[in-house]
Length: 471
Image (tube, rainbow, N blue to C red):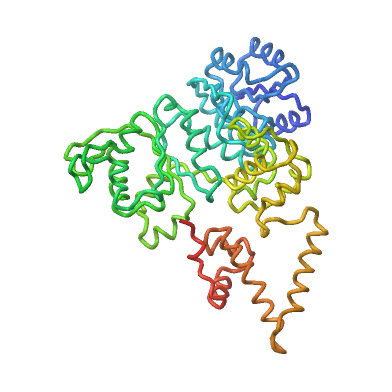
Protein backbone atom coordinates (compact mmCIF):
# COMPACT_ATOMS: atom_id res chain seq x y z
CA UNK A 1 0.00 0.00 0.00
CA UNK A 2 1.37 3.42 -1.00
CA UNK A 3 1.95 5.63 2.04
CA UNK A 4 1.89 9.40 1.65
CA UNK A 5 4.19 11.77 3.55
CA UNK A 6 3.98 15.55 3.92
CA UNK A 7 7.44 17.06 4.39
CA UNK A 8 7.56 20.65 5.68
CA UNK A 9 11.21 21.76 5.60
CA UNK A 10 12.72 25.13 4.62
CA UNK A 11 16.29 23.83 4.17
CA UNK A 12 16.29 22.60 0.57
CA UNK A 13 19.38 20.39 1.00
CA UNK A 14 17.88 18.59 4.01
CA UNK A 15 14.52 18.27 2.22
CA UNK A 16 16.16 16.63 -0.80
CA UNK A 17 18.00 14.09 1.38
CA UNK A 18 14.92 13.20 3.45
CA UNK A 19 12.70 12.98 0.38
CA UNK A 20 15.11 10.66 -1.44
CA UNK A 21 15.45 8.40 1.60
CA UNK A 22 11.68 8.18 2.13
CA UNK A 23 11.00 7.49 -1.53
CA UNK A 24 13.59 4.69 -1.43
CA UNK A 25 11.46 3.22 1.38
CA UNK A 26 8.38 3.27 -0.86
CA UNK A 27 6.75 6.44 0.46
CA UNK A 28 5.18 9.10 -1.72
CA UNK A 29 6.44 12.51 -0.59
CA UNK A 30 5.02 15.99 -1.11
CA UNK A 31 7.10 18.86 0.21
CA UNK A 32 6.74 22.52 1.12
CA UNK A 33 8.86 25.07 2.96
CA UNK A 34 6.17 27.14 4.72
CA UNK A 35 3.23 27.07 7.12
CA UNK A 36 0.97 28.41 4.36
CA UNK A 37 2.12 25.70 1.95
CA UNK A 38 1.54 23.06 4.62
CA UNK A 39 -2.02 24.26 5.18
CA UNK A 40 -2.77 24.32 1.42
CA UNK A 41 -1.55 20.75 0.96
CA UNK A 42 -3.40 19.49 4.03
CA UNK A 43 -6.61 21.05 2.74
CA UNK A 44 -6.30 19.21 -0.59
CA UNK A 45 -5.07 15.77 0.45
CA UNK A 46 -4.75 13.27 3.29
CA UNK A 47 -1.32 12.16 4.54
CA UNK A 48 -0.16 9.19 6.57
CA UNK A 49 2.60 11.14 8.35
CA UNK A 50 3.79 14.75 8.47
CA UNK A 51 7.44 15.66 9.05
CA UNK A 52 7.89 19.32 9.94
CA UNK A 53 10.71 21.67 10.82
CA UNK A 54 10.10 24.32 13.51
CA UNK A 55 11.38 27.53 11.91
CA UNK A 56 9.87 27.82 8.43
CA UNK A 57 10.01 30.57 5.83
CA UNK A 58 6.83 32.25 7.11
CA UNK A 59 6.65 31.32 10.78
CA UNK A 60 6.95 28.81 13.60
CA UNK A 61 5.73 25.34 12.65
CA UNK A 62 5.06 24.48 16.29
CA UNK A 63 2.73 27.39 17.03
CA UNK A 64 -0.09 25.80 15.03
CA UNK A 65 0.83 22.17 15.64
CA UNK A 66 -1.99 21.78 18.14
CA UNK A 67 -4.51 22.98 15.53
CA UNK A 68 -3.09 20.55 12.96
CA UNK A 69 -3.38 17.67 15.43
CA UNK A 70 -6.96 18.62 16.23
CA UNK A 71 -7.93 18.84 12.55
CA UNK A 72 -6.09 15.65 11.51
CA UNK A 73 -5.88 13.53 14.71
CA UNK A 74 -5.07 10.32 12.82
CA UNK A 75 -1.94 11.81 11.20
CA UNK A 76 1.22 11.35 13.29
CA UNK A 77 3.57 14.34 13.26
CA UNK A 78 7.38 14.11 13.53
CA UNK A 79 9.14 17.34 14.47
CA UNK A 80 12.65 18.26 13.30
CA UNK A 81 14.46 21.20 14.85
CA UNK A 82 17.82 22.95 14.99
CA UNK A 83 16.56 24.76 18.12
CA UNK A 84 17.91 22.06 20.38
CA UNK A 85 16.49 23.09 23.75
CA UNK A 86 14.29 21.34 26.28
CA UNK A 87 11.64 23.98 25.57
CA UNK A 88 11.49 22.94 21.90
CA UNK A 89 11.32 19.26 22.79
CA UNK A 90 8.50 19.89 25.27
CA UNK A 91 6.59 22.12 22.86
CA UNK A 92 6.85 19.41 20.21
CA UNK A 93 5.66 16.53 22.36
CA UNK A 94 3.23 18.74 24.26
CA UNK A 95 1.65 19.71 20.95
CA UNK A 96 1.10 16.06 20.15
CA UNK A 97 4.18 15.17 18.11
CA UNK A 98 4.75 11.46 17.54
CA UNK A 99 8.52 11.94 17.73
CA UNK A 100 11.04 14.74 18.06
CA UNK A 101 14.43 14.81 16.28
CA UNK A 102 17.02 17.51 17.05
CA UNK A 103 19.30 18.42 14.16
CA UNK A 104 21.65 16.96 13.14
CA UNK A 105 19.72 13.69 13.28
CA UNK A 106 20.40 10.11 12.31
CA UNK A 107 18.67 9.57 8.96
CA UNK A 108 18.16 5.86 9.61
CA UNK A 109 16.46 6.69 12.92
CA UNK A 110 14.22 9.20 11.18
CA UNK A 111 13.20 6.64 8.57
CA UNK A 112 12.53 4.06 11.27
CA UNK A 113 10.31 6.52 13.18
CA UNK A 114 8.45 7.49 10.01
CA UNK A 115 7.81 3.86 9.17
CA UNK A 116 6.57 3.19 12.69
CA UNK A 117 4.34 6.28 12.65
CA UNK A 118 2.80 5.27 9.32
CA UNK A 119 2.05 1.81 10.68
CA UNK A 120 0.55 2.93 13.96
CA UNK A 121 -1.32 6.05 12.77
CA UNK A 122 -2.00 6.81 16.40
CA UNK A 123 -4.57 9.55 16.81
CA UNK A 124 -4.55 10.08 20.55
CA UNK A 125 -3.95 13.78 20.96
CA UNK A 126 -1.92 14.70 24.00
CA UNK A 127 -2.56 17.58 26.36
CA UNK A 128 -0.51 20.65 25.67
CA UNK A 129 2.01 21.72 28.27
CA UNK A 130 2.86 25.21 29.35
CA UNK A 131 6.56 24.92 30.10
CA UNK A 132 6.65 28.42 31.58
CA UNK A 133 9.42 30.91 31.14
CA UNK A 134 11.99 29.02 33.21
CA UNK A 135 12.87 25.38 32.64
CA UNK A 136 15.21 23.53 35.00
CA UNK A 137 17.66 22.22 32.39
CA UNK A 138 19.86 24.30 30.11
CA UNK A 139 22.04 23.19 27.21
CA UNK A 140 21.92 22.75 23.45
CA UNK A 141 24.80 20.28 23.13
CA UNK A 142 24.33 16.95 21.41
CA UNK A 143 24.71 14.92 24.64
CA UNK A 144 21.80 16.86 26.16
CA UNK A 145 19.54 16.14 23.20
CA UNK A 146 19.15 12.50 24.17
CA UNK A 147 18.33 13.61 27.70
CA UNK A 148 15.59 15.90 26.37
CA UNK A 149 14.19 13.18 24.12
CA UNK A 150 13.99 10.72 27.00
CA UNK A 151 12.35 13.30 29.26
CA UNK A 152 9.64 14.02 26.70
CA UNK A 153 8.95 10.31 26.30
CA UNK A 154 8.08 9.84 29.98
CA UNK A 155 5.94 12.94 30.51
CA UNK A 156 2.64 11.26 29.69
CA UNK A 157 3.18 8.06 31.67
CA UNK A 158 4.21 7.02 35.16
CA UNK A 159 7.13 4.77 34.25
CA UNK A 160 9.81 4.60 36.94
CA UNK A 161 12.90 6.61 35.99
CA UNK A 162 16.48 6.14 37.19
CA UNK A 163 18.70 9.20 36.63
CA UNK A 164 22.41 8.35 36.44
CA UNK A 165 25.34 10.72 36.50
CA UNK A 166 28.22 12.16 38.43
CA UNK A 167 27.68 14.45 41.40
CA UNK A 168 26.74 17.96 40.36
CA UNK A 169 25.35 17.12 36.91
CA UNK A 170 21.78 18.11 37.82
CA UNK A 171 20.00 14.82 38.48
CA UNK A 172 17.36 16.46 40.68
CA UNK A 173 16.71 19.00 37.91
CA UNK A 174 15.79 16.13 35.58
CA UNK A 175 13.34 14.84 38.18
CA UNK A 176 11.87 18.32 38.60
CA UNK A 177 11.51 18.72 34.83
CA UNK A 178 9.65 15.41 34.51
CA UNK A 179 7.34 16.42 37.36
CA UNK A 180 6.74 20.03 36.29
CA UNK A 181 6.06 19.16 32.66
CA UNK A 182 4.28 15.84 33.17
CA UNK A 183 0.75 14.88 34.02
CA UNK A 184 1.46 14.94 37.77
CA UNK A 185 2.49 18.61 37.75
CA UNK A 186 -0.44 19.64 39.97
CA UNK A 187 0.63 17.16 42.66
CA UNK A 188 3.45 17.52 45.19
CA UNK A 189 7.12 17.00 44.35
CA UNK A 190 8.92 15.50 47.34
CA UNK A 191 12.68 14.93 47.32
CA UNK A 192 14.60 12.82 49.81
CA UNK A 193 18.36 12.24 49.90
CA UNK A 194 19.05 8.71 51.14
CA UNK A 195 22.69 9.58 51.87
CA UNK A 196 21.73 12.46 54.19
CA UNK A 197 19.41 10.49 56.50
CA UNK A 198 20.81 8.47 59.41
CA UNK A 199 20.54 4.75 58.77
CA UNK A 200 18.20 4.16 61.71
CA UNK A 201 15.76 6.88 60.55
CA UNK A 202 15.51 6.16 56.81
CA UNK A 203 12.41 3.94 57.09
CA UNK A 204 10.64 6.48 59.30
CA UNK A 205 11.45 9.24 56.80
CA UNK A 206 10.11 7.25 53.88
CA UNK A 207 7.11 5.51 55.39
CA UNK A 208 6.37 7.54 58.52
CA UNK A 209 5.89 6.22 62.05
CA UNK A 210 3.24 5.95 64.71
CA UNK A 211 3.46 7.56 68.11
CA UNK A 212 5.57 5.41 70.42
CA UNK A 213 7.06 3.35 67.58
CA UNK A 214 10.53 3.95 69.01
CA UNK A 215 12.27 6.09 71.59
CA UNK A 216 11.65 9.72 70.73
CA UNK A 217 8.57 9.05 68.59
CA UNK A 218 6.32 11.39 70.60
CA UNK A 219 3.81 11.88 67.78
CA UNK A 220 2.68 10.34 64.53
CA UNK A 221 4.91 11.26 61.57
CA UNK A 222 3.74 11.27 57.95
CA UNK A 223 6.49 9.90 55.71
CA UNK A 224 7.66 11.02 52.28
CA UNK A 225 5.49 8.47 50.46
CA UNK A 226 2.31 9.90 51.96
CA UNK A 227 3.52 13.47 51.48
CA UNK A 228 4.06 12.75 47.77
CA UNK A 229 0.67 11.08 47.28
CA UNK A 230 -0.73 12.13 43.90
CA UNK A 231 2.64 13.50 42.79
CA UNK A 232 6.29 12.52 42.45
CA UNK A 233 8.73 11.09 44.99
CA UNK A 234 12.37 11.70 44.10
CA UNK A 235 14.80 9.31 45.81
CA UNK A 236 18.25 10.81 45.48
CA UNK A 237 21.44 8.80 46.14
CA UNK A 238 19.45 5.57 46.03
CA UNK A 239 22.71 3.60 46.10
CA UNK A 240 23.21 4.69 49.72
CA UNK A 241 19.94 3.22 50.95
CA UNK A 242 20.40 0.53 53.66
CA UNK A 243 19.42 -3.06 52.87
CA UNK A 244 16.43 -3.10 55.25
CA UNK A 245 14.95 0.03 53.68
CA UNK A 246 15.56 -1.42 50.19
CA UNK A 247 13.35 -4.38 51.09
CA UNK A 248 10.51 -2.17 52.31
CA UNK A 249 10.87 0.12 49.29
CA UNK A 250 10.61 -2.84 46.93
CA UNK A 251 7.46 -4.01 48.71
CA UNK A 252 5.94 -0.53 48.41
CA UNK A 253 6.72 -0.35 44.70
CA UNK A 254 5.22 -3.77 44.08
CA UNK A 255 2.02 -3.27 46.07
CA UNK A 256 1.44 0.48 45.94
CA UNK A 257 0.88 0.35 49.70
CA UNK A 258 3.01 1.33 52.69
CA UNK A 259 2.91 0.74 56.43
CA UNK A 260 4.17 3.27 58.95
CA UNK A 261 6.88 2.11 61.35
CA UNK A 262 5.09 0.71 64.41
CA UNK A 263 1.74 0.64 62.60
CA UNK A 264 -0.53 -2.14 61.39
CA UNK A 265 -2.57 -0.25 58.79
CA UNK A 266 -1.79 -0.70 55.09
CA UNK A 267 -2.00 2.70 53.38
CA UNK A 268 -2.51 2.99 49.62
CA UNK A 269 -0.26 5.57 47.96
CA UNK A 270 -0.25 6.87 44.40
CA UNK A 271 3.22 8.22 43.62
CA UNK A 272 5.55 8.32 40.68
CA UNK A 273 9.07 7.21 41.63
CA UNK A 274 12.13 8.88 40.17
CA UNK A 275 15.45 7.86 41.68
CA UNK A 276 19.03 8.92 41.10
CA UNK A 277 22.55 7.81 41.90
CA UNK A 278 26.14 8.71 41.09
CA UNK A 279 27.23 5.15 41.87
CA UNK A 280 27.71 2.22 39.53
CA UNK A 281 25.04 -0.11 40.90
CA UNK A 282 26.36 -3.13 38.97
CA UNK A 283 29.22 -3.94 41.39
CA UNK A 284 26.93 -3.18 44.34
CA UNK A 285 24.43 -5.75 43.07
CA UNK A 286 27.24 -8.29 42.58
CA UNK A 287 28.45 -7.75 46.15
CA UNK A 288 24.94 -7.91 47.61
CA UNK A 289 24.95 -4.27 48.72
CA UNK A 290 22.02 -3.42 46.43
CA UNK A 291 19.03 -5.61 45.63
CA UNK A 292 18.90 -6.74 42.03
CA UNK A 293 15.09 -6.96 42.01
CA UNK A 294 14.84 -3.39 43.32
CA UNK A 295 17.27 -2.23 40.65
CA UNK A 296 15.02 -3.58 37.89
CA UNK A 297 12.01 -1.92 39.49
CA UNK A 298 13.77 1.44 39.56
CA UNK A 299 15.60 1.21 36.23
CA UNK A 300 12.61 0.99 33.88
CA UNK A 301 13.71 4.14 32.02
CA UNK A 302 17.36 5.09 32.63
CA UNK A 303 18.39 8.67 31.86
CA UNK A 304 22.13 9.25 31.94
CA UNK A 305 23.27 12.84 32.45
CA UNK A 306 26.55 13.68 30.71
CA UNK A 307 29.32 15.30 32.78
CA UNK A 308 29.96 18.96 31.98
CA UNK A 309 33.38 18.12 30.48
CA UNK A 310 31.56 16.18 27.75
CA UNK A 311 29.39 19.16 26.82
CA UNK A 312 31.74 22.12 26.97
CA UNK A 313 29.55 24.02 24.50
CA UNK A 314 26.98 24.38 27.28
CA UNK A 315 29.36 26.10 29.69
CA UNK A 316 28.78 29.61 28.32
CA UNK A 317 24.94 29.53 28.34
CA UNK A 318 25.02 27.94 31.80
CA UNK A 319 27.40 30.60 33.10
CA UNK A 320 25.26 33.42 31.72
CA UNK A 321 22.17 31.77 33.20
CA UNK A 322 23.83 31.65 36.62
CA UNK A 323 24.80 35.33 36.32
CA UNK A 324 21.16 36.25 35.68
CA UNK A 325 20.05 34.10 38.59
CA UNK A 326 22.68 35.63 40.85
CA UNK A 327 21.45 39.11 39.95
CA UNK A 328 17.85 38.10 40.73
CA UNK A 329 19.04 36.95 44.15
CA UNK A 330 20.58 40.31 45.01
CA UNK A 331 24.14 40.01 43.69
CA UNK A 332 25.50 42.71 41.33
CA UNK A 333 24.48 42.59 37.66
CA UNK A 334 27.50 41.24 35.75
CA UNK A 335 28.54 40.23 32.26
CA UNK A 336 31.37 37.93 31.10
CA UNK A 337 34.36 39.01 29.06
CA UNK A 338 35.26 36.88 26.05
CA UNK A 339 38.49 35.68 27.68
CA UNK A 340 36.59 34.78 30.85
CA UNK A 341 34.23 32.63 28.79
CA UNK A 342 37.19 30.92 27.10
CA UNK A 343 38.76 30.18 30.46
CA UNK A 344 35.53 28.75 31.88
CA UNK A 345 35.05 26.60 28.77
CA UNK A 346 38.59 25.21 29.04
CA UNK A 347 38.01 23.71 32.49
CA UNK A 348 37.43 20.02 33.26
CA UNK A 349 34.76 20.87 35.88
CA UNK A 350 35.18 17.82 38.07
CA UNK A 351 32.32 19.16 40.20
CA UNK A 352 30.22 19.58 37.05
CA UNK A 353 27.40 22.15 36.84
CA UNK A 354 27.35 22.64 40.61
CA UNK A 355 31.02 23.69 40.58
CA UNK A 356 30.43 26.05 37.65
CA UNK A 357 27.55 27.70 39.48
CA UNK A 358 29.72 28.15 42.56
CA UNK A 359 32.48 29.85 40.55
CA UNK A 360 30.05 32.14 38.70
CA UNK A 361 28.30 33.23 41.90
CA UNK A 362 31.63 34.00 43.57
CA UNK A 363 32.77 35.91 40.49
CA UNK A 364 29.55 37.95 40.53
CA UNK A 365 30.23 38.86 44.13
CA UNK A 366 33.97 39.55 43.93
CA UNK A 367 34.47 41.14 40.51
CA UNK A 368 35.60 44.78 40.68
CA UNK A 369 34.02 45.75 37.38
CA UNK A 370 30.60 45.10 35.83
CA UNK A 371 32.33 42.84 33.29
CA UNK A 372 33.99 39.78 34.84
CA UNK A 373 37.44 39.38 33.33
CA UNK A 374 39.63 36.28 32.91
CA UNK A 375 41.85 37.23 35.85
CA UNK A 376 38.88 37.15 38.22
CA UNK A 377 37.87 33.71 36.95
CA UNK A 378 41.45 32.39 37.11
CA UNK A 379 41.75 33.43 40.76
CA UNK A 380 38.63 31.41 41.61
CA UNK A 381 39.64 28.19 39.87
CA UNK A 382 41.49 25.33 41.49
CA UNK A 383 45.13 25.34 40.22
CA UNK A 384 44.87 21.73 39.05
CA UNK A 385 41.78 22.59 36.99
CA UNK A 386 43.21 25.73 35.45
CA UNK A 387 44.77 24.83 32.08
CA UNK A 388 46.19 27.62 29.99
CA UNK A 389 44.16 28.88 27.07
CA UNK A 390 45.71 27.94 23.75
CA UNK A 391 47.14 24.62 22.65
CA UNK A 392 50.83 25.48 22.12
CA UNK A 393 51.40 27.25 25.45
CA UNK A 394 49.64 24.41 27.26
CA UNK A 395 51.91 21.82 25.60
CA UNK A 396 55.02 23.82 26.44
CA UNK A 397 53.82 24.09 30.03
CA UNK A 398 53.47 20.30 30.32
CA UNK A 399 56.83 19.65 28.65
CA UNK A 400 58.48 22.19 30.89
CA UNK A 401 56.96 20.73 34.03
CA UNK A 402 58.12 17.20 33.10
CA UNK A 403 61.62 18.46 32.27
CA UNK A 404 61.90 20.26 35.58
CA UNK A 405 60.64 17.21 37.45
CA UNK A 406 63.15 14.91 35.71
CA UNK A 407 65.98 17.31 36.48
CA UNK A 408 65.12 17.27 40.18
CA UNK A 409 64.36 13.52 40.41
CA UNK A 410 66.90 11.09 41.77
CA UNK A 411 66.62 7.59 40.32
CA UNK A 412 69.38 4.96 40.43
CA UNK A 413 71.12 4.33 37.11
CA UNK A 414 69.32 1.78 35.00
CA UNK A 415 65.90 2.48 36.56
CA UNK A 416 65.03 5.90 35.12
CA UNK A 417 62.76 4.68 32.32
CA UNK A 418 60.61 2.31 34.35
CA UNK A 419 60.59 4.51 37.47
CA UNK A 420 59.54 7.59 35.52
CA UNK A 421 56.81 5.67 33.68
CA UNK A 422 55.46 4.41 37.00
CA UNK A 423 55.28 7.98 38.29
CA UNK A 424 53.51 9.14 35.13
CA UNK A 425 51.08 6.20 35.24
CA UNK A 426 49.98 6.90 38.78
CA UNK A 427 48.16 10.23 38.13
CA UNK A 428 46.97 8.93 34.75
CA UNK A 429 45.29 5.89 36.30
CA UNK A 430 43.95 7.95 39.19
CA UNK A 431 42.42 10.41 36.72
CA UNK A 432 40.74 7.58 34.76
CA UNK A 433 39.35 6.04 37.95
CA UNK A 434 38.13 9.39 39.21
CA UNK A 435 36.43 10.05 35.89
CA UNK A 436 34.68 6.65 35.94
CA UNK A 437 33.94 6.59 39.69
CA UNK A 438 36.20 3.57 40.25
CA UNK A 439 34.75 1.40 37.45
CA UNK A 440 37.77 -0.54 36.16
CA UNK A 441 36.13 -1.64 32.91
CA UNK A 442 35.19 1.92 31.98
CA UNK A 443 38.58 3.22 33.14
CA UNK A 444 40.33 0.72 30.86
CA UNK A 445 38.13 1.88 27.97
CA UNK A 446 38.97 5.53 28.70
CA UNK A 447 42.69 4.70 28.75
CA UNK A 448 42.50 2.44 25.71
CA UNK A 449 44.15 -0.53 27.44
CA UNK A 450 43.15 -4.05 28.40
CA UNK A 451 41.22 -4.40 31.65
CA UNK A 452 43.59 -7.09 32.94
CA UNK A 453 46.57 -4.82 32.23
CA UNK A 454 44.91 -2.03 34.17
CA UNK A 455 44.11 -4.32 37.09
CA UNK A 456 47.69 -5.59 37.22
CA UNK A 457 49.21 -2.10 37.14
CA UNK A 458 46.78 -0.82 39.79
CA UNK A 459 47.89 -3.62 42.12
CA UNK A 460 51.56 -2.91 41.42
CA UNK A 461 51.07 0.83 42.05
CA UNK A 462 48.93 0.18 45.13
CA UNK A 463 45.97 2.14 43.75
CA UNK A 464 42.61 1.00 45.13
CA UNK A 465 39.64 1.50 42.71
CA UNK A 466 37.19 1.46 45.64
CA UNK A 467 38.72 4.72 46.86
CA UNK A 468 37.20 6.45 43.84
CA UNK A 469 33.62 5.26 44.36
CA UNK A 470 31.79 8.35 45.54
CA UNK A 471 29.21 8.18 48.25
